Length: 237
Image 1: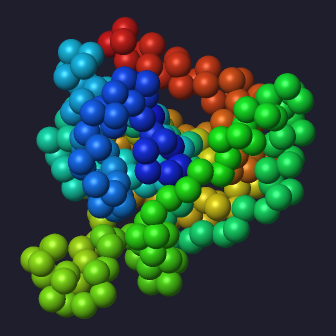
Image 2 (image 1 turned 90 degrees about the vertical axis):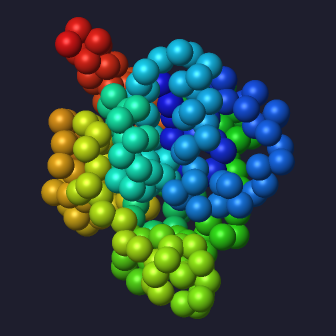
């Protein structure tokens, strides 16, 4: 199983920590752009485990990374058995209020708060934030715009950054979304779902916000049990 989390580097399972510690010369540019955030860790996990395919479980930007990677790299997509994701934000971003986080913390035990607060919020690269700003301002789901036609030609062999076509992704996909999610709102979800050609499961959780998917006390009931059943059903087939 491979996890896709919010910030670059946080989508890695335990085995890939060794990859990072032993490959420090890869440089920050490897992790800055959505397209590059999946390839190396996945190859490392496949080699480490001897598995032919992986389950990719993503949340937030971790799902965006996967949509880009699996729709643009068919060989990579073949190595993914299921793509199980908890919402995705593509062209709209809204600020996450303290009330949103507090409402989730209130549904957790007090003993857990120290652990969560110590890990949140993690940072990201400037270029990653510029990429998100580009998506918000343009309303398009596309590669990073390098700022001038010459640089774009150097990177993409065309004057403008290419659009990402989610409908080209052939990985079986399950989706969970939250009715109170201001980061990946229902408008974004409604725009995304028809483009997923192999949508095998979808569930809207009306009371969920952006962080409830991993902080919600009822997440095992609302999400994880179904996620495990989907995997077990795949094993049986």
